[in-house]
Image (tube, rainbow, N blue to C red; front, side):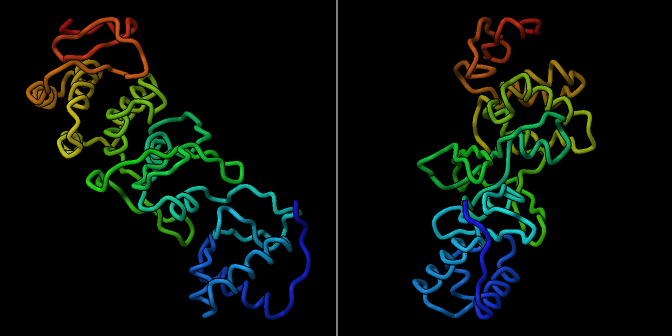
Length: 270
């Protein structure tokens, strides 16, 4: 644990300029451009400032400033979304984290869920005490994303409809099928609901299991959406899927080609 110690006037000026321009986090590359100095010189400078307690190292070559009121460099991330954008771009905040942002769940999830085009070695990193869960997606799947501002930093988050589709594609992104179903019903009751967009995104994603889960859940929770239910029915792919791949399917709903747990067996089309 480092404690704050003094730096010279030139260092203070340089650090202040970097913090002013870099907006939340500092990389060696950015600092080089700001100060017009070489990469080795800047890397040593940032490392020195970190040792003196003015910066905190997040990852190799990435730092965050230490608030003046802090008594230690062992600080939590002020806004994990900014760090996610810095470390995992191209990416967006999705799943339960996006559902929380859009007010679709009252559950508190401690882990930040990030959908990234990167292929990280570690899928559940812990950075400064904040847990992240990383899921790799293709460039083709980068749609239905909204820019939001976190301070002076623009961060991408899945829009409410894309958030639902991601959870139907993989219910674990919603915390499991029960939590996903709760978020889905909240979505259906909200002003954010857009059934046509749900169907459009399902087609764009191109996973037949999503039609099966969407049709099944619509029939259960919004039976009046007959047109959408029929479209899902007509779009069914061959083969059977699981309502939640992490749960054993005890009953096959032939109408939806969907294996479901016993607790979900009160359904049409068995």
